[in-house]
Length: 169
Image (tube, rainbow, N blue to C red):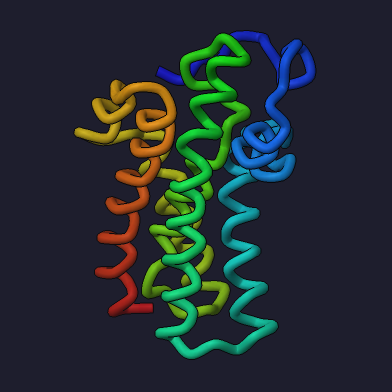
């Protein structure tokens, strides 16, 4: 039920600045084409940069990822709700904090290398776009809950498949 009408972020009269910053994930939601893909890529790049620059253990990397995921929910659900209301759209395509949350779920347990990053990225995008049962039904949850949790569920599907494939790659 993503609303793909022509309203853009710059056409909205009233902006709650923090909500728009979070919901558009610091501008990734303005990416063209496919703002969700840009946001997923940004989430993977942040994860990879953290792993590359700080050299955390696998446990530390997963803890950091869980904290980032929790923050994306704590701030993302109300931000998505506010932006949807202010834009007058049920699920604006430029709201991408949901893709970030779903992508971070998919990366849990991944080794910090390009093969695992690419696999997580591709799998999440497939499940986010195709929305297998019951992912599409979760969109019916009210406001920010539906906007965010369908992608979290898509991320869980992608995590399951990625976990099985990690045995071979």
